[in-house]
Image (cartoon, rainbow, N blue to C red; front, side):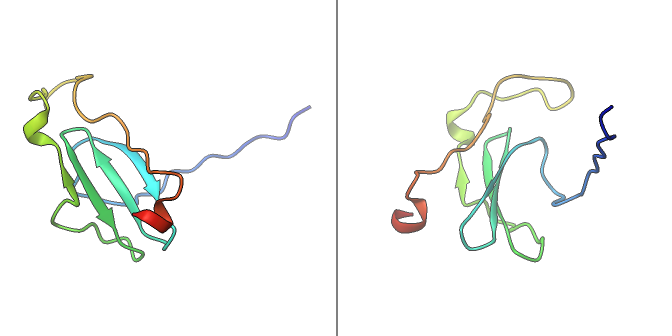
Length: 86
């Protein structure tokens, strides 16, 4: 018999259209990738920076915001030595 596993959701940021990736940074902050083409910084206290740290919107096809769409930014990966080389 297996013990029941409990799962809970926690809101970490508001103000993104379709968050697809959360990448923790070595300093306690995080990067949130939004499908529409923005990467935004999430501060330690949970505040989402107004200005994106990266915008790829001019390189992506427009996505359908009203329904499911597989186009757009899908994930974010950092260099293995990101803490050293940024």
